[in-house]
Length: 147
Image (tube, rainbow, N blue to C red; front, side, top):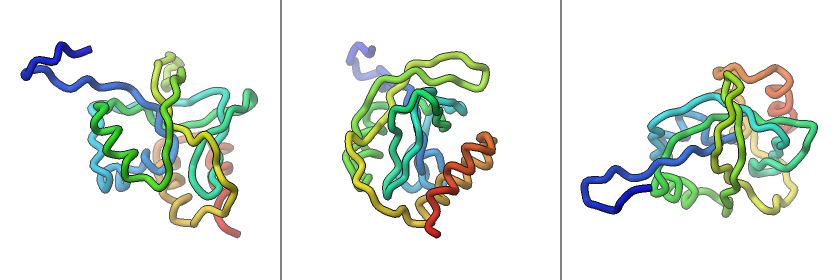
């Protein structure tokens, strides 16, 4: 917590990001400048893209993404630019070394079904590949590409 004096730096919080927000190009377009980042996995959740990205509870699955350290103002700025209203939920993500880290994860309470646009899926697939996400997870992402 910050004391509120003028010289204090804004408080930063860890968030688990799993969609297009892990793409460096998208981060730049939205004005995201994380103070730190780490590849992470979130057990107990499954990626959905129909047509927007979301995670849903599934004890047999895991989602991959990035832990990003951002200020509350940065988070509000980013999520204020998105097409839907995502809500923060507390989660325990695991970094590459298997250490758990408390983070906020932004989810849609309800996702209306629909087909995702190819570019929308590619905005996740490209960084997921570059970050070395498992092959089965990359296949999951590809499964949302229009046929």
